[in-house]
Image (cartoon, one colour):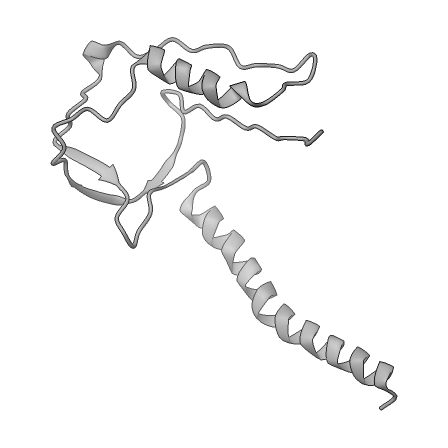
Length: 128
């Protein structure tokens, strides 16, 4: 049996969220949103192939936003472009940059150090 990890996140009103993408005029005349019923059906289809363990906690269903409060055809829309994807995060830009700073330093210096250690080990095994 293969273990699967399923993580589902919900963005609620009032949550802090960093969104990076391309802001532009919305040229779409077709609503690209699912109704609450269609979204729930899609969620159930995704979960259909996953066997949840006994006693697993399933998040309660949230009340959908009233359709009258939601503009399905906004004048401006945030989306991804070919060379720039749409990115969402619960962390701030500063936290993301700090995380990338130490990781990039580790990867830049760790690669050559690992190469030298492997070369030293190889020379030792060959008797040099």
